[in-house]
Image (cartoon, helix red, strand yellow):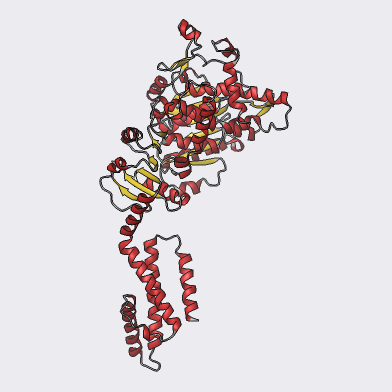
Length: 580
């Protein structure tokens, strides 16, 4: 009976402490076992009929002897019963385990990880700040049993400090020791000094000897968007923090999906046509707000019933906006020509600031608040909600996305009853195995390129494409939810109706392709600017100048030089048809 009660207590304690850190859990288990030994000794030695002083002396003696027992110097013969001996043996095992964990855990962990890295055929190398790396390494271990993980500290950290659970801490020289017969997944997490470019160059040189080298690297957002980087010897996926966060946001709150849910459109020739453009307000035009605008611009290339047929209207509000605009217009000059994007330079909390927002309130579908720190963003969200209600628009409050730079449970709780308020954590990125290691979208984009490569022998392999063309393929994959939302279920259509829908979507695909190029700095290349030789070869672009002849309306494509009539439109059609 005593043995059964002891084991039951052990199980209950295990369950209660399962979320605790292992070192703390081991110490508490030793404490429980110590109390059990004290109780057993006291039960055996209890002086029945003795005085209080004798009982106290016995209890103190039992406490001392229990410590001796846990140190393997006790006398198990005192227990006399087999069940007491079993309890004592279990306690000894737990004590040995606790000592190893508390005093030798780092050494054991390091030894285990060294062996894993030596024997494993697949190795994960994570570089970045400790905070970011802990999240990703933990997620790797959730998906891969006994994963072999190495962790390289970022250059901003002066010393290693505490070991990182689940990984062997290595220095920069470890990269040069990579072996050609192993498969490596290298994840270069965000850094503030552009050091990842240097590491990419080192890995590019190493890629000539190590063929199975996959690299996911975080770089500056403008570098990803406006430069064309090539790493021919790497299976590289280059991404920015802002791109990752905004993509998640747009997948969760899809513009065309929102318009459909609100009943703001109708089916036109088998494809959804919104009555009005998707209308957003971006408050704060730093890196996150800029990427949000550009990505939303790319995700709203659908045609609407508006007079200009455009799918986006946007109000951009910030202080000193003219200065922030200047660089963007140099990088992406087409945005300066977009009449649907209105730029308002107004100090936050000023009359002009609130008057501008109130002038748009009846039309807004989404507001992004990324104007300052977390406290200010939350305060501004609450003020805007009050303004909406005072104006009698309580039933038409748009989606309000509030940027959080740190943990803000109180703020989230404060606005938790507001069904149209959402939070975007921009300071605590949940780096995941799915996005950074598996890279499902990347695999689909590469498969898309291989299909295109099969029909065009002049197109290079995936690694030789450069980040611009790779991102162009990724954008096709990311846009699949939009096309499916626009077309709905076409399985029941006749062949003629199906063809009509596909050609409508091809028209949309061309608009999307145009916007993708505009948001990366490309402009139209007039046919007159082509040389006679280029026209004969049906050339379409001047890559260095970022100019392309096909950046025209759908109806104008047939007037461009092309190898066969209609082939330019056929490219868009094929991109769409394969989805269905």
